[in-house]
Image (cartoon, rainbow, N blue to C red):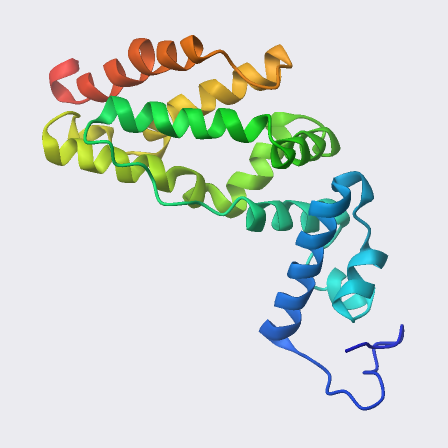
Length: 206
């Protein structure tokens, strides 16, 4: 279903609006990002694939980077968090998933987005503005289970505390410029920083 550049629907077609059009644009952006990476993502290609015009895209996403970030978040939608039965196992599995992701084709797209954003801090600011809850969600889930089991302090159930481990791993990726971190680094993050923090947090630790 196509629309001409002026925004009029093509002959014989009903013009899509609202959620249906937005879904078509997003799917087109995801497909383009998967096939060509961020460097090959253009508004023209997405519009052609979605059967719409660039104005329809710009009304929803102000620039190519915003569209690329939205498509990346769609691609990287969260899977169910691990449930190994203890906090250490869950935290390590979450970090190992992130580690595998960074060196995967999807991770390569993320590195392109970091470069396009002007750096990791700038990218994270944009991602956190729109999907901070999604980033913290699996960590809050595994931490909530740990609190229920008595493994962690209830005061640790805060997004900034819950996500300390993944932030430290991201720093490894960005500062060291590595495609993946050695497993002993992940173990060190969990054993030396994350677990002591969430277990001791609260009035008793002061």
